[in-house]
Image (tube, rainbow over the protein chains, first blue to last red):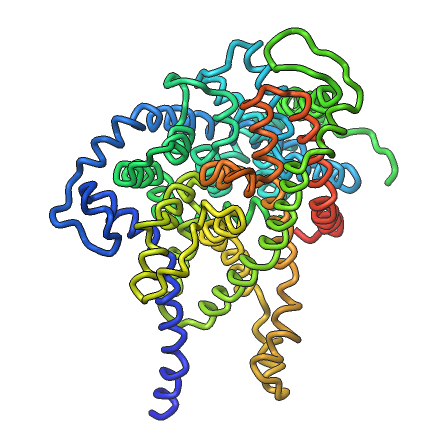
Length: 274
Length: 302
């Protein structure tokens, strides 16, 4: 009995601290939510709850960012599929390599993952204009697929390396070619790796600001991050609609995170730890 | 290994491999190798980004840059961010991981919340924190006023002396989840026997942590430090959306200055020179991490 009591005594400060910190983490989002439901007159008192929660700010926000929100979806979904597919294809031969070649490949992939992307923006801007892909959604697919190559290859190479090599050799001896082994044995066996990678790529592409700022300049292709950045840095900020727009822009990533939490965390760790 | 005649099934395997690698390698050449070379060349030219005319100017872009106080301030801010990112989010993340590690219930609930901010776009973080930092009615100023310290509330983002530190506050909220999850996973993989053995040998919790747990967590620490240095160098989104590098360039970092000079002023030569400086700075800071990681792989630790 006394040991049980002392156990709780040791435990509860830990829980109290964890709860207070959790509150600090959610307060910014709660304040944004509260503000987004208020009339302009009520916004001045940040602590007060809205007298009658209203969705007017969301209507204004959707008029401002609705189109770009849809652009974001149109960029992100194919962008994720292309980048994961290319990463898996590149990773397959690289996963067979050993020794020195292995190390060189790792070095190149890591360098590609970790380089500041600002370095490529100016030539990329010219290149995409010459290709006629400036300010187009397919142009954004291409760019996200291309700049996803190092991280996706790195991730899938690590994943494939954990698949026993004997499986590959057995398949070859059975007369199954390497390409058929890849498509009908290795890929179906790798769904957990592919889905974890797809989740972290979704976050990366949905959240991207830099490439989208360089390569889009109108409603036709501009994603929600660029629109939100413009609203945030405008001179006369209307915080009610801005908070509504912000919350709308985070809904897809937050929902994806809550639904696929395990794959999300696994992906974040796999992309950096191996 | 003696050369053997390749087995029948190995014939043609290299052809398949090369086909698999063709597109990714082409992408890498076109989107990584070519732009880096072109940026280096452009840094020695005068060019507005649109006209076909590029004029060679030698080292003039670099000399102009090194003569410009804005550049040195941006670089200094990158150094500030590096120091901040290396120590603060990692220390807080480790603290949170230790806090949750011993819990019997509710771990996953707190884990979800602590990691949540890291999933949302940095631009959204900037928008939310601009409102929290609003100098008249924002949460921080209102809270200080409510406890009678309203006179102490600074103009969080408007005062050049503190703007960078204010942006760091928002960045902490956003990025701590990453360090937390790295350490959390690291703690789960620790051999519990080692820590228990230390406790049985008479070490108190503090000693057991510093002598046993923390050294065993080195792989997690290396990743957390490495990713922090990467983030500090390519920091862009949150600064751009929160302050645009202002007021009076006070919160500029190399990436935001480069972007402003390139696409705001269309001075591609000078912007490329900044990009090259950023690449050199990033190489110096990040290279130890890259070498460390590829060594680890070479040793077979995967």
